[in-house]
Picture (cartoon, helix red, strand yellow):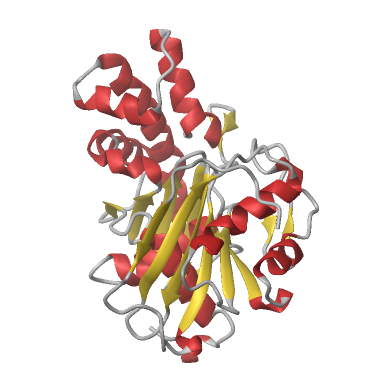
Length: 327
């Protein structure tokens, strides 16, 4: 099998105490989470006490060709000791046809080569499973479900989750169920196309936007991690660059949180590791935008584990009626 060239950094985590030997197939599934700059594969015990048994992460380049991207998506799965799962759920960013498993990418600065490509068939052949053994869920929705189900001590009725990284992912949950088409919810539950200052929100709230704003202010090209570190030190340009993005996020989200009657807003993604220098401006923007009284605003507790556990939870419940869905 031809593999795409990958970053040499690999993270493999396994539960050596328990292992996977003898674990009932029905209780396990494979999960692949595709991000803007990485892919993670995991074997998840989706039983009564779900846990990530083993995982591996590889960097990827979203500008690769279609064949190279498909190779890159499954490359971490081939690093797993126990990679013979017959059921896989793929947490994929949008725009994507999740039912058919076909890319709808284009004009979103990533995965352009997958537009109109049958990703399900391509991944199934590489994993050696039947196409109907692969299901797709939105990556932000998987993250949100993971946080709702396992990240907090209580499961609120209405929860909104946004993930901050290469873009702005989002999901609206009603008692753990994804809501994409209802009054009070933006189309598809996606906030990244919403307008702020006459432009899509991602033009202000994203890695590239924050880096560009900081470069404009300082003349230096820094990563968001470096900008956050400077903000912690109190450097004014770094603080202003982050505050601009977080205030815009709060102002844009607030009306939708109110119309959805959200009980909790969870903020996740790679940027949330810098929560102390993000939360103030976010809360200020939410307040100025008219956020509902009593809204609980919290950072992700599960971080990278959230989409893995969330995708497995979704796979357990997607074919069941609400009355039969597991808690």
